[in-house]
Amino acid sequence: MNFAFQHRGYGRPLVVLPGWAFDSRVFPLHEMCRDIVAPSAPLTGEVTPALLKFLTDNGITQVDILGWSLGAVCAVEFARMHENIVQNLILVSARANYPVEMVKDLVIQVSSDRIKALRRFYLTAFYGQSGDYRMFRKKHMPALLEIWSARALTDGLMFLMHHPILPYTFKETNLLMLHGSEDKVAPLEHMPSLSSRARLKKIILDGFGHLPFLSPRFHEFLEDF
Image 1 (tube, rainbow, N blue to C red):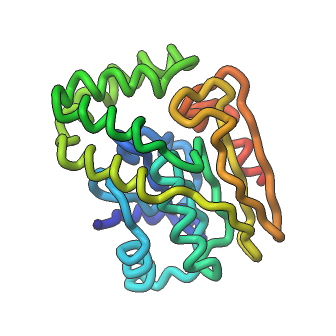
Image 2 (spheres, rainbow, N blue to C red; image 1 turned 30 degrees about the vertical axis):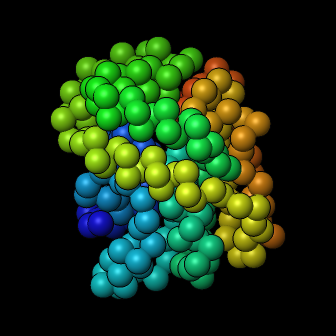
Image 3 (cartoon, rainbow, N blue to C red; image 1 turned 180 degrees about the vertical axis):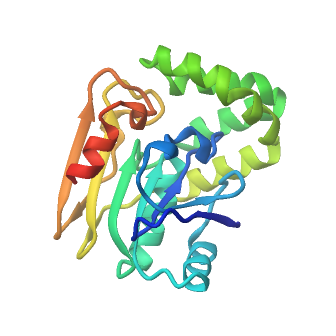
């Protein structure tokens, strides 16, 4: 796993970790006044060793991490192992676990017809966000349908199945959890049990599905946190 560094001179970088079947382009990065570290290829699982090496090689000692969906799993794993590096942990649409039957069904769909499976998943992910979906379908979907192989999609699903987010309390890292009320991929009742002795904030966005970071208020939430 390689990472790209967008150095804009804003100080502590923000690491962005995207979800299954997406990539970092789905985030409104151009609107963020931050230095950005993002995967340079589709994210399919473990990132901790590669991310730690990248940060070390670039002399970066403190970061904030924004992890969405599968990226939230990776973000929690990194922060638990290297809490001294992570100042703020922002988890979007995090799910405690993905059941075996759910994952197996998706693996079968991907193996049978990758394009059809992706289109179906994107519709589910954008539930409640029809305007965002129309923009995504025009701007990003064609490229994602090309870059995601059945093997990479299956690898990501297996990673999710075998890496639940277990209950945990961070000692020094601030924790922000953001979730959409209409999320069909990671419903509210399946949010992980995480807390922080430093600072904890949970925000539920009414009417949003699996991509609540597309809310115009998202940057406001980050700045206020």
